[in-house]
Length: 155
Length: 156
Image (cartoon, rainbow over all chains, first blue to last red; front, side):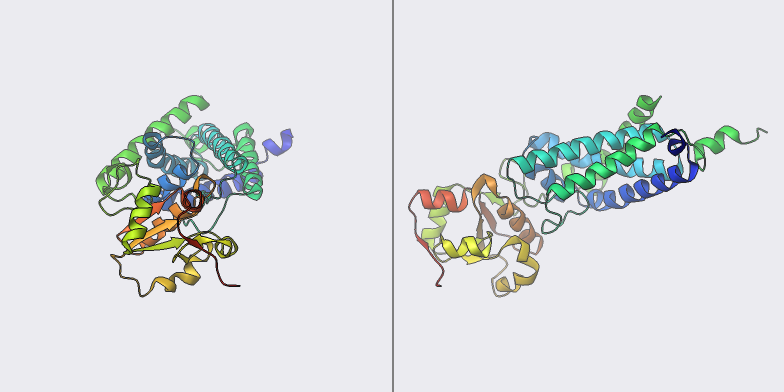
């Protein structure tokens, strides 16, 4: 496992994939916070005030974490946050499935007619979670702004 | 280290989120929250949920168009008398059904209560497509039938 965790190219590929994904999916949620709030409300887990706060903050958190992964800043912090978000999202989907709710996921698009929740969605989120946990434990910082700042010649 | 980074990202995201929504008058600071239930503060025209008694009152008035958002099979087994079937999943393909319906027509959407959210989602879609008088009868088919209100079945 250790060679994988320190493989510069594998880490870069994972960072790029997850970073791009979260940047792209956050944009629609940022532009349409009301639609995203409705997606959250459909899960019937949190009340209206918290739903609105989540719909306001989560898309920006996804965007910032995505950019952080892409540029290699705050790598451990952003992968920790993404892992936490994915655990919560997946728990929400499982909870909704167990309660028999017939709702759209609201994960990648806010179009209610596509992306219904299902066990495939759980598998999909689980895969993304595995990738973000991998990044959290990875030791490679090559191709990152953090590394550049640390190693650039002074003066 | 990781926690400190995560905290900084979280604070930055919260600040950006609230500043953006306030500047753009969206979400928390907006006037349109399409599809929210009546417990949400809503714009004047955004869909709200109504009780079975209100649904019955609108039904009796004869001025409301009832739209059943359940699957066609469920609709065929029984539906509110006079309602039309527009399953959420087929909205894009079948929305022409409403082409002749005036945008200010009172439309009441229902499915089947807590196990089904398609009425809320369909209401949001209609609202976004310009229908300004959309209401959600969330109790839907189950509550209507339980009260022995007028129903009908599709012809075989």
